[in-house]
Each structure stands twice: as structure tokens, then as C-alpha cells.
Length: 113
Image (tube, rainbow, N blue to C red; front, side):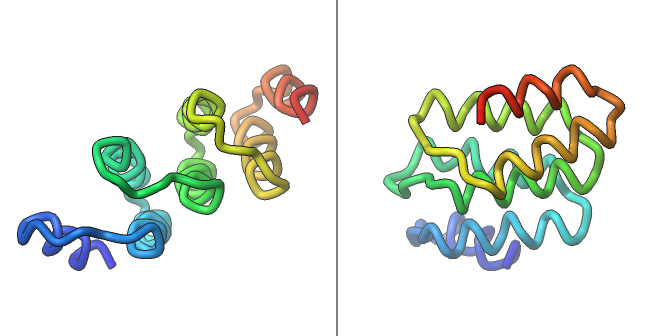
């Protein structure tokens, strides 16, 4: 999936939301949460509409690798872009904060729910 995204970018072929989501999920599986975040931030420069599925893939990639601060950053971007949070978003965010020992941050996420 990552190779496909790289090739489409090099050949000026448009990616779809599904392609980007698959690439972000692939990043999660191989531990490349930074690349997942770059893919999400790069979407703002395209016509691809970001939705909860795309953002949740990035949240999960960060959460799986203990990057609770980046999870909260993704939540902030979602709020700025008016992307609605869902159960997956909140669950991964609370889990990331809990794993990082950031109970106060986890409670702040719960309060937003």
C-alpha cells in the first residue's frame, strides 16, 4: 500500500481516500506512525476528503506505538476540519493516554465525548 501511494505521487496519479487509509493502516502495521501522520497532513493539499476513517487509521497508528501526544494532535486537527469523532477515535485516544500514564489527558478525552 505504501509503495502504491509513493508511485501514484511520483506519477501525478490521484489517490483515493481508500488508498490513503490503506497506506496509513500499513504504516501502523510496520511501526511507521510518523509516515502515517505525513500522509494525513498531505491530504490537506489534495482534493481527497478526510473523514473519521482516515483519521482513525492515523490515531490507531500513533496509539499502537505509544504516541499519545500525537494522538491528541490528530484529534485537534479533526476538530479543526470539523471531522466528527466516533467510538474508534475516542477508544484509541483514551487507550493511548492510558498507556502513556496520562490519566488526566484520558479524562479530558472522555469529557469531550
